[in-house]
Amino acid sequence: MPDGVMRWFDEEAGEGLVVRAGQRFRAWAGDTEPDARQPGARVHFDAKEVDGVARAVNVSLRHGTRVSRRQDDFATLAGARRAEAKGPEPFAGVHPELLPAYLAHPIELVRRWADDLARGDVDAALALYAPDARISVGDVKVAGRRNLQSLLEGHPVRGSRRRARVRGVDGEFEAVWEPAEPGERGVAVRCRVERGLLSEQRFTDIHPVGRAGAPAAAPFPIEVVVRGAVAREAVAYARSRLADIASLKGRRVLFARIRLSELADPARSRPSVCEVEIDLDGDLLRAHVAARSMHEAVDLVQRRVRDKAEHLEQRRLARRRETGAAAPGRWRHGDLPTARPEHYERPVEERQLVRHKTLATEELTLDEAAFDMEQLDFDFYLFRDLETGLDSVLERLDGGGFVLHQLGEPAGEPPAATVPVVRSPAPVPTLSVDEAIERLNLGKERFVFFRHPRTGRGAVVYLRYDGHYGLITCEESP
Image (cartoon, rainbow, N blue to C red; front, side, top):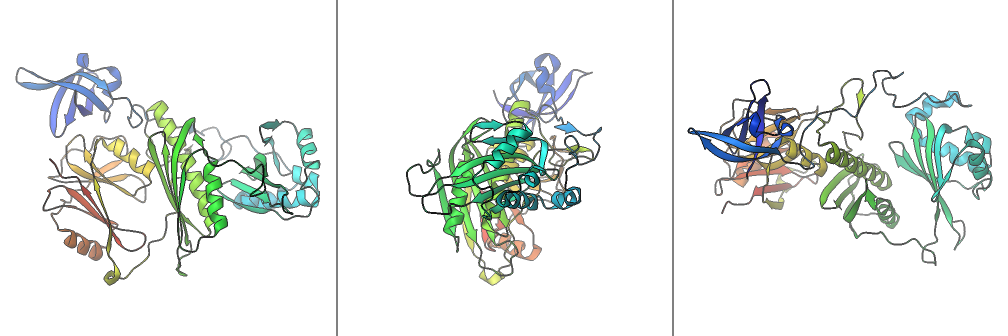
């Protein structure tokens, strides 16, 4: 039973069209289950010839994490007080003049709270909490304003005058009081800031390094690769942050690889680069960000991995696709734009081809390719289109949506996909690798998609972040 793409289905006429590798098969309602009648869906079917016409029978939906069935939004905010609101209005605290500053710079709220606690001013620290703030100490939940006050008044940091080290991004921060003496335990407080107030906190102890009671190792293997002058503290911080995500949405992390790079280029405003690859129960998640410091890059990449895992689970449960852009008055989880590393403008005469990958391209629908590209955090994706059977490249546009490049003659009809895809009218040239690199340099494009003259398969040459070239080719047909 082969796979194909349901290009269209007319419920009134009770007829549809299934396409596979350029071949077209008529499908009737009696031979097609209702869930498989969604345009752009990947389907199983049997090919049968009836009166000289190829037909698709026993058509059923191919269930999986990348199948599109419904395109629902996560939520609508038509009745919200403010366009950006996602919950009730915050209460009128005792620092109303500071709320605008905390909305714009939430890390300053955490610093203010840590300073108030270290000075012993519990009332000032309490004024920075949201009324429905969720507090936990280890596995114990702290409920009620009175219990929270008792917690802060009895906390060992209160009145110590010790300055906390605060870092984090995107509303998630950590305030750390390091151990003051050898063998002493420090304190770490994870904080979430929403609408200029503390909405969630988790208090944990920092165990002394190299002593009894030290924290256990990560529950899964972590490989760390360091390039450049990366501080040992940053490596330990990356390990601890990644070890915190031992499970994502109920799925186990089997393996993780971290690449930390400090780029020795004073012209770069974000020289710290963090790359993470995670094996999540067989699904590969990848994130790649740059920041002003390595700690900030680690925080950004951990947040992005959590968002990707959340999106993966939502697609697994609902089997729906998101276009990647929120419509006015609507919101979606996660952050679409990521802090991409800056390209190093290496002179052309110094560039070399430093990486060559050969892929056994899998047949995918456009929706599946777009989903894989998002999970792998790529700007373009080389695959074999299930509908046409052609080697193809899906390119992400900066303003949202995708462009489809394919070998062969461009088709006249629009692509069958639920994500916004336009087909490139330009034919794919036949070039040698050297000719493709020359075109890449002259056109100043992100990549060049071309037909390899020896294999006849699609290939991509692209400019890496370090200014050198990379090459991706398809596995030769047997």
